[in-house]
Structure formats: structure tokens, C-alpha cells
Amino acid sequence: MPSDVVRVIYRKYDGSAHRDYPARRLAEDDLGVWLGVPAGTESVYHGRPSVEQIPFVLLVPHHGWWTGMFNPPPRTSEVYCDIATPARWEGDETVDLVDLDLDVVRRRETGLVELRDEDEFAEHRARWGYPDDVVAEAEAAARWLLGALGDGTEPFATSYRKWLSLVV
Image 1: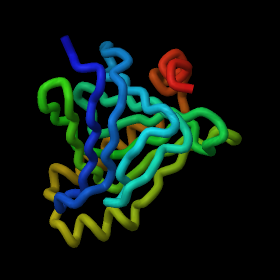
Image 2 (image 1 turned 120 degrees about the vertical axis):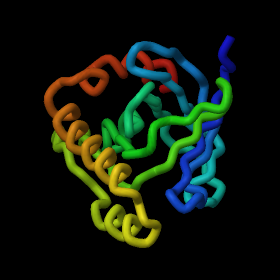
Image 3 (image 1 turned 45 degrees about the vertical axis):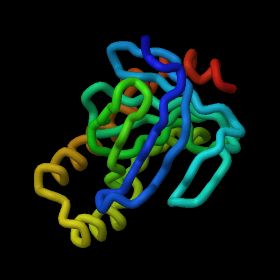
Image 4 (image 1 turned 90 degrees about the vertical axis):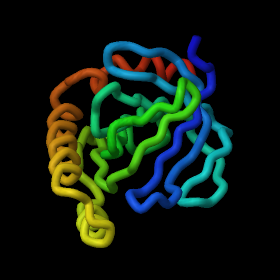
């Protein structure tokens, strides 16, 4: 039986710490593993201790080059997707991802979908030597998400709400 608590670890391509936090396994379906993070969860962000102020749900897809964070108000991003290497699971208790800088975000108030951090992606690509296949996968995931967050593709339309309701 899978563990109830999953440690989520994001690193940068050079291996440096990015995000690290515990999450509660909510479900697993054809889309991936749904993890809940309540407000007050102690975490590490950019290598520094932090506390999550707003709860969220994270979807770790089975085979995608992204993760999806689904947020309640007052967070201004309704959906925030990190472009990342496919999840590498260590048993059921830990999931490791490499954050590849690019983010695709849907704004709550306007529904605007935007690609963020292209400059950081270009800088890190040059500094750390992202292989061409990694660049191609990251860019393809960003293009797909730009469409999916705007056109009603699930889980970005409504299906995430049932999971989010469990942590708010």
C-alpha cells in the first residue's frame, strides 16, 4: 500500500536545492498522482526554510515533462505548471524532479495563460548545458500546456477542484 505522505523534491539541473516539502497522497488516476499540501506545511524554497501560507494540490503526471499546482484564492495563479523532467519515484515515499525553469501559469482573475521565465531557461541552458533532447521536451511541454490551460483540457478545467477541496 502506498505511503500516505510523499516527500516532493525539486532540484535545479545542477543538483542545487529548489523546493522540498511533504505532501499527502490524495489519489492516483490515469492523469497521475494527486498530492495535497495544507497551509502551514513546513517546506524549503530555494534552499531556505519556509512555511506554505496557502494550501495547494500538486499533480505529478505519470509521463509528463511538467507538474501542475492548483491553487485556491487568494493566490493570483489558479494553475501554475512547472516544466520539469519526468518524475522519478523512490518507492512510494519520495518523488524527485528537476525544475527546468519554464513555467506556464493561468491567472485567476483574467484567465490569461502565460509562459514565464524564458530568460532563466536560456541562461541555465547555457550555464549548465541542457542537452538538446531536454530542451526539446521542455519546449514541447510548455507549448502543450499553453494550449491545455486555455482550452478546457482536463485536469486544468474543473477536475482538480475535487482534490483541492480536500486541502482548503
